[in-house]
Picture (cartoon, rainbow, N blue to C red):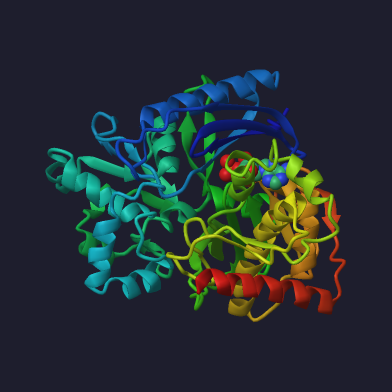
Length: 490
Ligand code: ADP
């Protein structure tokens, strides 16, 4: 009998999760475990790579057991991961030489500013599709070489390995030093056009090529692990946001997804065309599959679900995030109230880092429900702004928006998203789209699924939100939002 299950390892920023999926894409077991966040100083964030591994492997074993299976039943393992987080380990001993420097960590901001002053930004943009920011791996890797005793000398001799978290887990699982195109495209060191590490950028950051992993397709048999006893192929690596796009079966150009978490992450498939954005969106590799690479445009909303946490914890207008829906539904509309949660500035398309939040349109009749509703609507307005940028880059309107993440459970928010966009919003049955993407990619590599079309059948809609506003209602709402944004920026 064939093996009918795949194990997705979803290594996230605050927890490690493992999910066993069956051939119908249904979840058979899901186990997650939080692990320690290390804050050595304000703005710095680290993880212990061994804690990442320990929590990941523990959840994997538990998920197989919880599914009532043994490792023999697992056809493949797919890994999806927090992106950009940087690990460096000793090639000989396999041991990390420093903690993982997490994507959120700002320790290399000044170094990025220096590189910008030297005029490197246009090169970075053109070659990597990214912006020159401390967020991405390259300058974190450089920091380790500069600050860990003996690291540079050892690296020059070929004694150190660099990897993002996918590579680190792969190394622990089967001793292979590799990554996939989607993760490589987040390092600031990878040329997304030539699909190779970029010598100009390696030289600018002074990083020895010997440290870098081999780059392979996202759906690919990287190696065989024996850590569970029986041999299991590790058959997919993919960055979390790209994996979610794949898990949403957004396989064709123009298809896109929005993940509503603390922040929102929007990705639009642009097919085999890397589109250089004029609006400050990122160009990224979506995945490597079927002997080609496909690209995506990426934009994010800094404060998404976080505005709901703010309503709960600071404003104390609601007791729980879920309650935001019923409170907002107490009023018919926002009553002209707009919340712009520019708590840390505004991203695409405004790019104003000094902007701070505003509430506009208050009258004597404005109450708690209006503010809660306006806060929810700020999530969909901001997401729509990013989508309009993507549409402008592609010169076409999106047909539908697929959604996932914690705040996507809010029906009022999803309806507003559809109304503001003027396009249907589709929520899938599986909320674990990130893990599902990795499961799909690994299942494809081992032949559990034959082709992407088969996966389209597996993706099941739970609910569709159809736009209910006419053009003029939409224009009024959007122009109210624009006015509020302008006041925030002024
Ligand atoms: P993350 O992965 O970023 O931690 P999640 O996908 O778990 O985020 O989503 C949690 C976020 O979504 C929180 O910011 C929370 O305030 C928000 N959220 C959760 N449920 C709802 C809801 N029903 N309505 C609005 N926001 C919600």
